[in-house]
Image 1 (cartoon, rainbow, N blue to C red):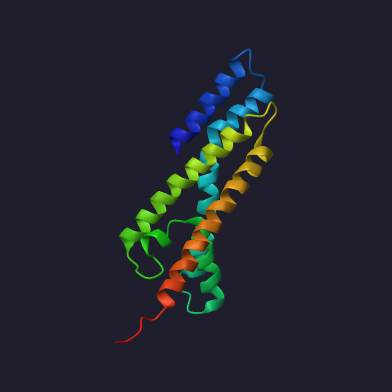
Image 2: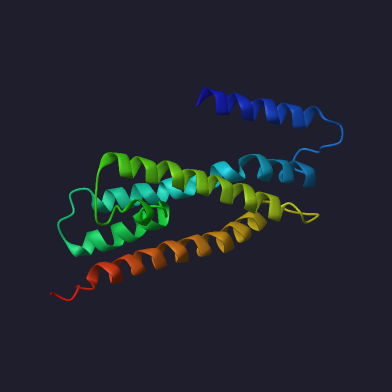
Length: 159
């Protein structure tokens, strides 16, 4: 935490002392989006994951379990790849969380690069690009979950 605060202070001091970058100007906002876009994407997924965890911990009903699991898939889209709906375990959850954090960081970086290609850009442009990319990730994770559910629901013919 201390390092990120120090990095932010150094970034702001560097930006404010540079004659070519005006504080709260166009280049300043582009720099902030490029610097903090990946972190914001991971923070958004972490917040969704916390809501999912609050819904899932101690849940014994479908009223809390279904939305909690859907939010868990939204926050951690690699859960179906590690077989978490069928098989549990701390290692599987940790691998899914780490790999999803890497995916979200890459998505935030990609959204920052795509949004700052325009001459004037800031967080609304980043949010628009991130939303477009995230919908694809969420649809892919839900599709994978649906394929798994269908595959597990088919009973082999008894011989």
